[in-house]
Image 1 (tube, helix red, strand yellow):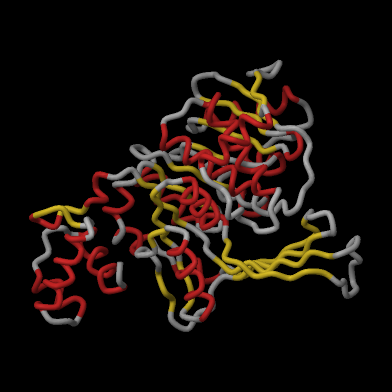
Image 2 (cartoon, rainbow, N blue to C red; image 1 turned 90 degrees about the vertical axis):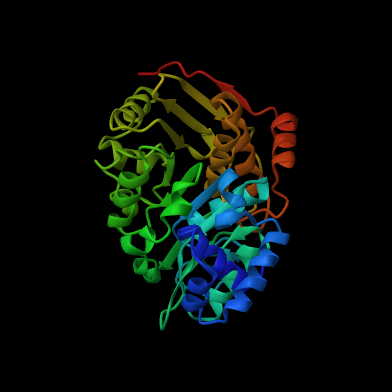
Length: 376
C-alpha cells in the first residue's frame, strides 16, 4: 500500500461515505487521482464495494495505543562496574512497550494497528519503516513537528540482566483525547485494545471509559512509577499484567506470601478487571480471573540472553490468545513460551517468534500449568 493509499484509507475509516471530490479536497490532489487510488485499493482487496466498505471492517484486529521508540541497549562483556567505562556491545532497535507487544502479536499472525506519536526526525521514520516491515498498520501515527522521537536507553550486565535504564518519551504526551476521537472507527472495530501506562492519565481514562465496556482493554503498568496511574482506576480495563512490585502498588498492600498474592489479585478483580496476570520472574506467572479460576504457569530454568522483551512477548501472547478465544489453560503456556523465546534471543523481539514456533516450545519444554494451593 502506498503512502497516498494509506491516507485515503485513513479518511475512509473515519467516514466511509466520503465522495471522491471531498477526498481530493482534503488531500490536496485531483479528483481523477483519487479515482485511480480507489481503483487500486479495490484491486488490492482493501475496499469491497459501494460506500467504500473496508475489508478490514470484517477482520479481527488489535489496536495498540502507546509508546513506540528507539531502544539503545548496551551489554557489558564482563560484570558491570558502575561509575566506569565498560567494554561491551551496543545495539539500536525499535521498541516501546506497546510497540513491542504489537510487533510480537503481529509476528504471531494477528492483524495489528498502532496509534502512537513520533517526532519528525530520522528516528520517527525508522520507527514507521520497521513497523510496516513487521506487518503493523501505521496509519494511526501522529507526527509531532519539531519534536524528537522517544528514546529508551538501557544498560545490562554480562548475564543479560538490566542494571539501569533511562527513557525520554515526552513526545507521547502529544497524543490527545481529540486525536483519539478521530480514530474512533478504528478503535471501535478492534477485538482488543492494548495500552501502556506511559500514556497520559487522561488518555488511559478516556480509553477505559469510551471502549472498556465493549472491547477488552489490556494494560501494561510498565514500571512502579507508571503503575500509580492505575491505582484505584482499573474499572473499564479487562486485563492487567503487573510484576510483583507493580501489583503491590495497584493492590496497595505488601505481597510476601502466596496467600497475599491471591488476596492482592482478588482486590484488583473487585475493581472491575476480568483477569489479572502477575509476572513473578523465574517463578513464572500467577493468574486469577473474575470466574474464580486461579492458575500458576512456569517453565524450567533457562539461560537468559536478553530479559528486556520477556514481558512484552508475554503480553503479545495473551492478546493473540484472546483473539483466538483460547481458555487460560492454553493461553498461559503459550504466553510463557513466547516470553521464553524472547529471553533466548539477543534482540528485544525475537525475529523467530510465530504462533507455530511458540506452540512448539510449549510442547517441547512441557510448560506446566497448575492450580495454586490458595485462591481467594
